[in-house]
Amino acid sequence: MKADYAIDRRQRAVAERLLAYGRTSRGGATYTRHRTAERFIRDNDNAFLFGVIFDQGIPYERAWRAPYVLKQRLGHFSMRRIATSSVPALRRVLRGTTPGGALQRFTTKMAVWLRGSARLLVRDYAGDAGNVWNECSTAGEVIERLDAFPGIGPKKAHMATRILHESRAAHGFRRWSDINVAPDVHVRRVFVRAGLVTRGTYAEVLAVAARLNPRYPGALDEPAWSIGQSWCRPSRPDCDGRTHREGRPCPLRSVCPRTSHSRLTFGY
Ligand code: SF4
Image (tube, rainbow, N blue to C red; front, side):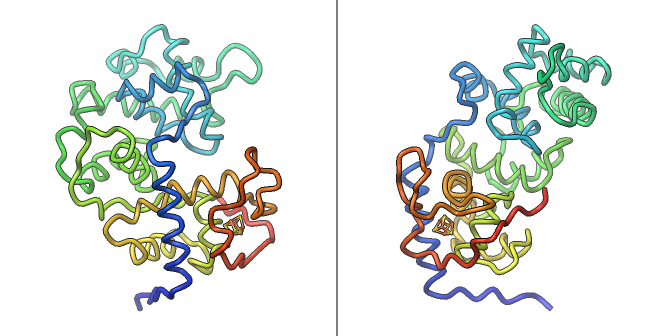
């Protein structure tokens, strides 16, 4: 039987506050805390695609900086050359030569994914990730194409399509309703504590987001993620912003029921 995700007034108030917070920060998000690496993922579509693939199980700044460091270590960023590299050779580059220099926790898996993605780019998109999304008219098509890349999958495909839509302004996809949230640990934690969902399963978060903002569920993603990063930490939510770098209270403070102050971590 299909679950009935009825939405009440309090949940609507939380969603409206999330959307308002998202409107103030949209497009201004930075991913790397490194100016040159940031420019690289913004200006180079292949670097953006690799950033999406790296963004798994490690802090996001480290993941999105990785394409730039990879280019420096390789001495090129040619998809054709990466596509014909051996996995051990790529893995060595990903590991680096100094302690703590690995670009990812899972270097073997990442080498397989990057080589596989480069091969798909060369075979189907003339070696240019821009051709993955520039030819699409709907968000759903972009999501479907990205989902086919090794190391991406549905969750990251939604996240990447939302970033393309919001931050890389040239992409005027139709049917934004196709873009849902990418329920990572931060989004799920905020959805639970703010009383939008009860258990925080993927299915529940996706269904509730679609009910709360049917024209564009994905608009709830960045603000929920940002609040999870800055205020609604796993072990102890900082609703009043006591440890926030600007001393600002959580944007949801006046509408959030704060259903749980206990540690909420969720698995990847
Ligand atoms: S008000 Fe507190 S519990 Fe609610 S989302 Fe913000 S930090 Fe989390």
